Image (cartoon, rainbow, N blue to C red; front, top):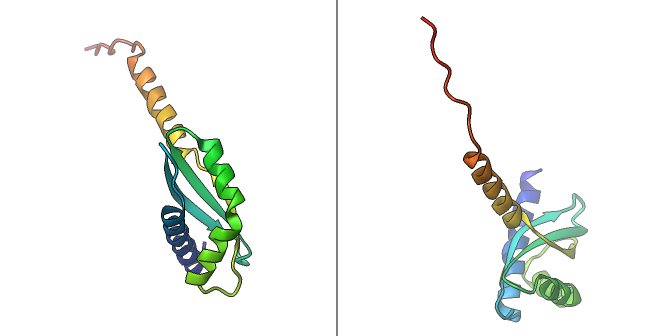
Amino acid sequence: MSQRLHRVNELLKREISAVIQREFEFKDSLVTVTGVNVTQDLKEAKVFISVLGPGLGTVMARLKEKRGMIQSRVTKRVVLKNTPVLDFRSDDAAERGIDVVNLLEEVDELPTAPPAEDEA
């Protein structure tokens, strides 16, 4: 990934996070923008959202419904040749991480072979 695309991704992530924080209130849920991936031509952006707490479906539905409003607010603050169309997606990396930790704990509890005795 080019340095410019990396900077655009981080800039969009910061601005989308700010818009969501100012404009939305999600009861009993913590909503975080975990990443943004912009295409090379800057026409589309995948916005990855992590939701801690209940209501992943309602949060995602609300963000997709208000995509135009979020995009227009971001456009006012970020000047790009093309403003990317935002595509909100669920990011389940935290859940996958918890699953991996649980698997490692299960493996740690499995019986192990006794140490080999040295023959002298």
